[in-house]
Length: 264
Image (cartoon, rainbow, N blue to C red; front, side, top):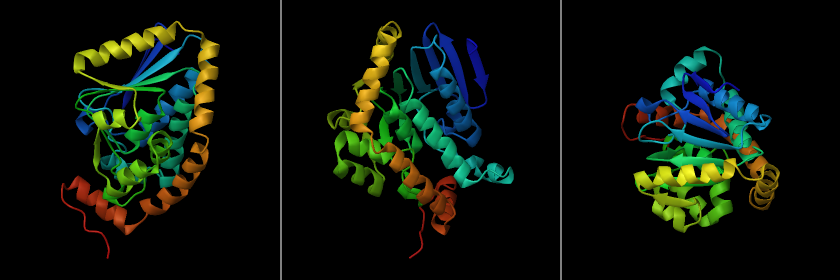
């Protein structure tokens, strides 16, 4: 891997033993198009076999972490022949690449972590957030279901009641509440956030690589054993919903900044 790689949608910078991945679509609150999801997945998978990399820090440029799929790119993607199933495959591959990385992944979250952005934040081994940050499973608001294993990861960490509330009602969960419910590692002021992330990255970068890998694997086996089944079920369900009239209405309403009116 080169020391620095910049592509539309994200950048990858190898800083010593730390691979820094930054989503670079701040005008769209770091929403992801298909190509960015594919590229990020390929980059994380390539890092798996790179002995120079000991930790990944994943973040978003500007004031937000990631607000999920970029609906404004859907028409162009459809014209290129990119199907809903292809999008789901790319999203699931990225989540599994983060979870199965043989080294720790740190998520640095500011502002919104919404849609599949919630899954990225919670798939990381250590998630640190700013005081203004929040989690939002907004799928139901546009006629979809959670994907990326997000609901399963919330349920694994905090239980079914919170997962149901987030997934079925589609409201914001402030990061202060996410900490108390056991979803993330900590909330910090803007200045303290970077200090915390950098201290954790520095320690992990010089830690015992194999011991960290096996510890991460054991933690995942204990808490995320059902992730593969969740991703498979989401792929089938989401592909159906992405072709539904309710999603067409939900997406149009979101882009038009109006309230969606779903079928009776």
